[in-house]
Each structure stands twice: as C-alpha cells, then as structure tokens.
Image (cartoon, rainbow, N blue to C red; front, side):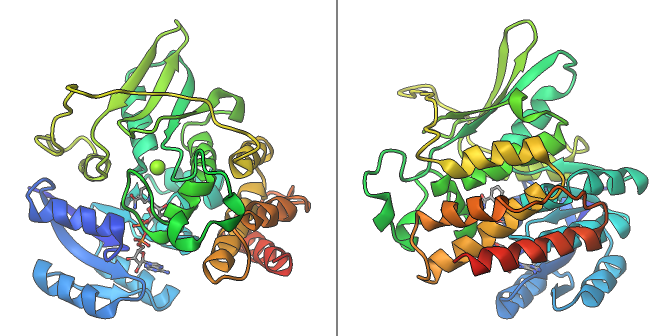
Length: 357
Ligand code: NAD
Ligand code: MG
C-alpha cells in the first residue's frame, strides 16, 4: 500500500516540485489534502486534479481541523516563512511525521520542536537539499567530526556595487529556481545562515563544527567530515525532486530514476572560502547559533522584516544586514520553550526590526 501524504504550501516552488513528482510517478503516494496560503483558484484546481480536499490556511482553527480530518502518514511542510512553525506543530499533534522544507520551523522552534516530536513519537525528516544530503550521509556513521555545508554563493559573489542591487536582481538565483524570499536570502547568504542554524539543531552540532564552503555548481549538496580525516559527499543535479521524494518516502519506498544520472563529462567542481565582510548575515548566524535561546528567532524575524522592506523599496540592499545586526544587539537570552513564548520573541524582534528600518 502506498504512503499517504498531505502537502502544505502546495502552490509554491517546493509544493509544485512535489506534485510534479506525484504526476510523474516518482513519488508513489495517495494525497489526503493540500493547504495553501493565498492562491485559492490554483489550489482548488490542484484539489480537483488530484481528487483530494484543499484549504487556504485562513486561521489556526481551520488548519487544525483540516489536518485532523485529512491526516496522512506524513506531511510535507513547504510553507514559506515563520507561519510554517505553527503548521509543523499542528501536523505533529495531528499524528503525522514531517518532511520539513520550512527551515524557519527549525530555526524558530529549535530544541522545543524536536522535543515535541519526540514526545508525540513523530519523525522529522529534512527536505532542505544540504540537510537532506547530511541526513542520508550520516546514517550508519558514528564517527562524524563535523559538517560541511555547500553554498552556491548566489548572484553577487563578486559584484562590486552591492549598494545598488535591486530586488529583481537579488531574486534571480544562478542555479536554483525558488520562491522570492529564499532567493533573496541566497544572495545575502542569510539562507546559508538559516541553514547553519538549522543544521545545528537538526544534527545537534555546535557552530564550530559546521563549515560553509562556496561551491558554484550546486552539485555537491553537502559533506560530512569523519574523525579519521576522510570526507563523504552527496552529489546529484541541482533538482529539489530528490530531497523531497527521499524525505516523503523515508526509506519505505525504493527510489528509482528520481533525477537524471550525473554526468562527469565536462564537469568541474570548485570550492572556495566565503568572505566574512561581504556576507555579514552568515557571520551573524554563526554567533546566533553559538548563543541559541531567543537569538535564532530574532535573526529569522529581523531578516523577514528587512527583506520585505527591501522588496517594498523602503531600504537598500546593504540595509538588510544592518537591520538584522542591530536587532541582534538587543538581549534575546531568555529561553523560549513553548509555542507562545517563541511567538512572543518573534513579535518583539519584528517590532524592533521595523523601528530600525
Ligand atoms: P514559495 O514562496 O514558492 O511557496 C510558499 C508556499 O507557502 C505557497 O504555496 C504559499 O501559498 C504558501 N503559504 C505562504 N504562507 C502560508 C501560510 N500562512 N499558510 C499556508 N500556506 C502558506 O516558497 P518555496 O521556495 O517553495 O519555499 C518554501 C519553504 O521551503 C521555505 O521555508 C524555504 O526556505 C524552503 N526551501 C525551499 C527550497 C526551494 O528550492 N524552493 C529549497 C530548500 C528549502
Ligand atoms: Mg538549502
């Protein structure tokens, strides 16, 4: 019998890739429900095509009732942004495992999210390509020394006049086609910052054992360093279908012909260090992971406020890092160990970041 799957953020970039995998028979699942954020007409078209119920996430009550009524074996959370945390918790509480693309859930929820999953006897499987790579590499290895996360470096690795960057330029990613927020975060390396924090919580690694290397080709999705000095890497074409299918299948379905085999003809792989001055948002993320408590929540909230203000033309490109840095200068050392406490820190950080615009 095939696994059942519910998708949140079904109309977005990850949601669309997941539904294409179902259409193409790469993911053998029965869909129990689809949740979207705004685009009601696309969502109902998808509901008709796949013959399953769908809803807009109009309130916590609506979402909770929908998840309980349409419970699946596993939920793919592909919502963009902080709203993903509540959805992740509601999915776990409704009795579903989580294939988690929404990295904000992990950055904000941190230890609390994982203790909730454990309390409820549910699994969390990462979908982010780097974390998916590490998650699968790490199986069966106990002597892992550290993690090496690859970063494409975004569109501005060597650009001179960063101050004049426009939102459309920042959203044009060189190797991945993704939603607008994550694309802009990729250009500032805030996305890599969120991923360093995500890796810290997911794999229980301190900041000093997580390395970032710039790898322009996006073919090596991440690596693990072993204590014996060797390194294992996961390579595949830059296509989110594989991490999505692997997380949803979660070892219960053979994965065959999911992405085209990698060709080594003419393939060059390069690795380079990243520039701390050029990418302050990644540097800040390391400090945030070192401090934990409310800092990751404040980092994520301030970045969401700043990126939105940049898209709206309220601030310049370089101001994104300034707003996040100044927000983090406040004291976020109180530990938030409930959903309400997390959302309070999130709200306070948003208010502070908005006042700094
Ligand atoms: P996107 O903007 O393309 O899609 C977001 C989806 O979430 C849309 O369907 C939207 O309607 C829905 N949504 C927004 N707010 C919602 C809410 N409150 N309730 C329910 N649905 C809501 O974003 P994306 O690029 O698909 O990214 C989704 C998540 O996956 C993000 O957390 C991102 O960081 C992560 N991610 C994406 C990629 C990628 O390749 N796109 C890779 C790794 C991780
Ligand atoms: Mg990623």
